[in-house]
Image (tube, rainbow, N blue to C red):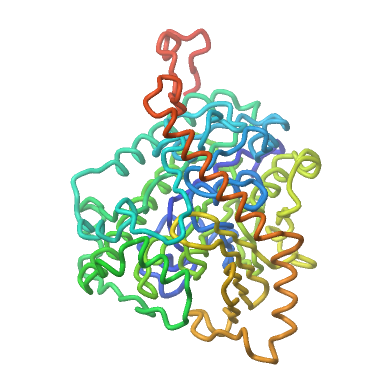
Length: 498
């Protein structure tokens, strides 16, 4: 039985892991994930969880703050995450939690903590404005995000992602053994954030070989059947129009992607075993999610940045059998809702209510099976690279409504049409729902003003980067510190628990 003290919270996050390959999310899923399957079977699995922007930095900023991109203004992967924004870490820390991160946070700017007491690793990517991409009249092919990288999909001996995830796992387990076990009086919030299965898609034989005899399915919808300017822009951005992947490359990439998912599943299993071995398991709520999905060749698209289900929908599960009965939640939630939810679980609801965001709500009651009055919607916004105009979407109930600035809107019934093949925007019997969703999505937003604001921000950051590049003072990458002279038996308070 769990103790009466506030629970530890272990938030495990994968990078670019879509929901569709996971059998606990989609019965057609082909990824082999026995450890995640076990957590989902005994936990609360959210069948309709969405990111708030299908891009790393904006999505993570929404998860941490509960705000949408139009509010937190993390427009893309080179946008500063302002230090003045309250986060779930601030809320939990105000309630007495130790807040620790191992792995990727993707914070841009001089504040590399945002409410974490400490970080156990550096980040995967640059923390300055180097990745700021200016908006120009026409999208351009970007070699760094090109489908040319599919040419190397397959086996490898090691790579940066494997090395990074190995360190992330080691430091997280070290924290559990050295600090969490020996300071039981104070609950912890540990965020463990891996970089797989982000492209490029490569894995070691241990995981690839598990798929050797599995016929990997091709994309269900290989080409875009619905006219969509964003698709055309992204085909240029990702070089899909220049370097269309062959059928063999598509299958090889999907196989390697699934193998990377199996690698993450293995790491999750190891961490769960460690919690059990250390006696922390009963008092720890395990949360698993991803920052966004991956198109993986569906509709001829790759990577993220689209509002189709493969890019926007994410796995989300809570595992704490002593607290929450196993169930499958059908109501719609978003990653932004994680912020007030974890704050409430940690006893920081008052702080979250006072300083939190109107863009998100705690779904603690859904964890207990009470869906009465839940908003049942998720909003996503995209102001990042690869598109010529920003676009926004809302999923409410069975419908998804999409706005592209200066272009026709789109409407789909995702429940009846999960592949989004039939645009209902001009059908008279959908006029009422179209108007309702438009009002809920736009709220009081001035999309033209937001677009100008995002453009100005990109241009300013691009100038600042070019002006400061090479300066000794322009270094924001996190440098983890370890006091070797106080480790092991050299420390005054060295661990004695056995």
